[in-house]
Structures are given as structure tokens and as C-alpha cells.
Image (cartoon, rainbow, N blue to C red; front, side):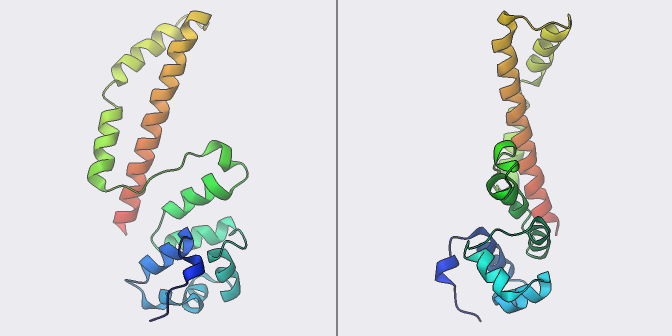
Length: 159
């Protein structure tokens, strides 16, 4: 078994590779992982040491090979110049916790639906309706994040 890379110990790509090595011994070494991913060993080392940023194609390969769909979210919200401002960071939760969060965020959906219809039915958003609309957006964001976290959990457990 390969020794642990202390400089890369906090790197998400390294952690995902080591976790995946529990089911694929070839992933214990950067050489083996790089061969499977289809990149140079030194490039993988530099990605795991945060010296360079992975290309999106490499992240997709690692996410698939390591069974770590959370790598895609990490790349988008932490390393992509556009995603940093638009993609929320997701947590990898247990399926029970993720399900409860989705259901909890949906509990007020009837109120949101009613308020949204009231606000938008006349085609004009007035100043006094804007605070309520901001509250609706906050609720919709919560539902979106919770459903994405559940989807991430399910993807991780399907493989």
C-alpha cells in the first residue's frame, strides 16, 4: 500500500482517491490513478497538491472513477471562475438526513405557491410585494440546494 501524502491530506481530490482505493487497489498510488484517469502522474500530483487546477474533463473522470460526484460540485463552486458566483456548495449527507431536509423544505410549498400567484397574477411587482418575493426566492433556493444534496447522495450510493 502507498504511503499517505501529507502535503495533499486536505485536498478533496486526494481524499476522494484514497477513499476510492478501498474498493480499487490501483487507486492507492498516483501512478495507478493517473493511468486509469488518463493523465500524467505528475499532473495528478500537482492537482492533489493544489499547485494547479484540474480541467473540467479531468474532474468528470475523477468523479466517475472515484465514485465521488461531489468533486463536480466542488470544482464548479470553488474553482470555476463563473461557478464561484453561481453554484452553491453542497454537503455530502446520509440519505436519511438529505431526505428529511428535502421534505422539511417542502413543508411550506403551498404558501409559496399561493404568494407567488398573488404577486405575479397582475403581471406587475409592486414595492410592497418585493420583500415577500425575496422570501420566496430564499425558500426556492433552500428547496433547490436540499434537492441537489439528495441527488448527490443518491448518485454516490447508486454505484
